[in-house]
Amino acid sequence: MNSSISTNSSESGQRPRVVIGMSGGVDSSVAAYLLKRQGYDVVGVTMKVWPQDCISRAEDKCCGPQAIADARGVAHALGVPHYVVDEGENFERLVIDYFTEEYKNGRTPNPCVMCNEKVKFGNLWGKAKALGAEYIATGHYAIIEHHADRAVLRKGRDPRKDQSYFLFSLRQAQLQHAICPLGEMSKPEIRAIARQLGLKVAEKEDSQEICFVPGNDYKAFLKSHMGAGEFHPGGIYDKAGNRLAEHEGIEMFTIGQRKGLPGGSPRPRYVIDIDPVTSSVIVGDAEDLITGEFTIDHCMWHPSTSLRAGGSATEPFEVNVKIRYGHAGADATVYPGENGEARVRLHKPQRAVTPGQAAVCYRGDEVLGGGWIVRQMAVEPVAA
Image 1 (cartoon, rainbow, N blue to C red):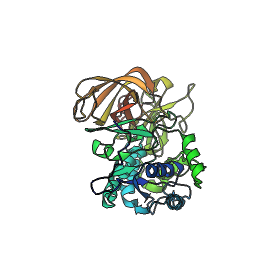
Image 2: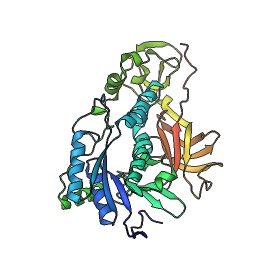
Image 3: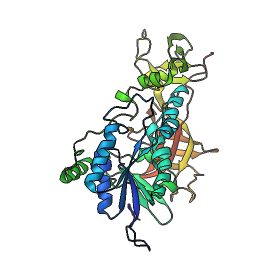
Image 4: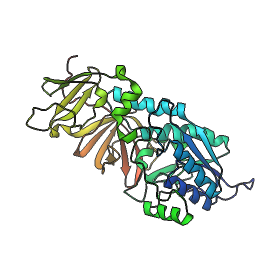
């Protein structure tokens, strides 16, 4: 098994070509250097993904003009060709529209997972093949092992930086043509290499935000991008069905939220359910956020010794599941169902299992797959 591809010359005597997505940050910059050092024929590509009406065209964004300039400068310093590809239209359709539609439907989206699946390892692969590339690489902190019959996705060695969660939905056809050179490394090691190379991005800060949402203020982004007429206002109710207040749109709420709720209660209130049919927001106590079992849909399971060879699960199996990126993980039993659904029974109940988020299942450091958390009604539906 290999965490990288052999770079032995092919019959034509050419080195394997890899397209590396360069965001202008230190991670993808060092990833490009490592690939070149390993003997690959490296081509740098930066995706221009900001739509014309996107309000996040800031200089420090990974999709912004400064990022392109930084990536181009690094490529020049490393002596690799660099191209800019315009993915703005596809990014808006596949990522931003998904982002807004999820909030309209009372769910909390995970745009980074969708971007990886649909754009970085999706549309970009077609462009990579047009450039004669055999592989796509990124600066993700994850490990992809390439076996003769399958690819195995594993957690990155540094638990503080592991990004395997965001890659869980990649299909085998995508994983088999993907390389993540940083999976065995830590952030300090990456910065040290960048300093040794004299790269200007060596001390560039990591972005902690969704790339198209400035200040991580998703509410401001939705208001700017959607327009007031597209919001779904309604009522805020308690579990007994009492109407407590009005709200300007279910898009402004997510499960577990405490801010922006009506007062007058002796105990803190939290959003425990969002009903997109009646545009109702249901509030309750902290204990109402505790869940012992939930459903996931659009499941995707990787081929594994613990699953059927084709990557589909038929019998219950044990996992450690992350219900959001920052979650520490919890032991659970997965009960596969029909039509791409599965039931996840947690061995220890967890807080704020949020519809729309990815539930990613691991065995040890191996990613088995996962799915998207489905809404569970906390109370009986409130009449519209």
